[in-house]
Length: 119
Ligand SMILES: [Cu+2]
Image (cartoon, rainbow, N blue to C red; front, side, top):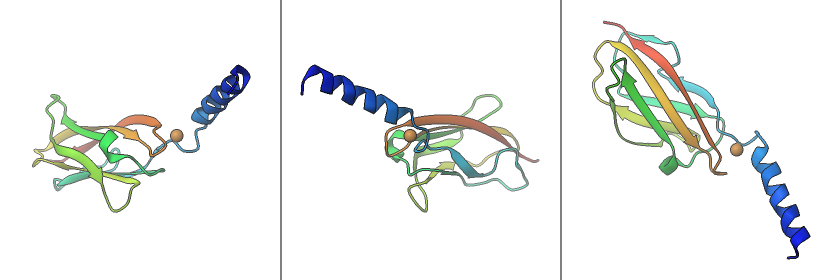
């Protein structure tokens, strides 16, 4: 490759990395954002718009005091677009779910939402 070819290849790579089409975005979740539950869930499950690399994707679940309730690593659910993490028995309260997703094209996205477990 001469220098011009390398510059062109690098520019093309940046352009494709900039494309938003393959970034994993949250499509739905269980518990859902803002949901008020009367029974404690045993896991938190998030469906994304793209297939994920579960080894490089995480779901943290913590209460208002910052105490973590997720247990173990996040794993794929029913398909590669679903990420699941088990949670300890949840006392009533407010919970925040923080997710970091790496899609199979290695692009990273993140977000968070909250749900409430009624007493
Ligand atoms: Cu992407």
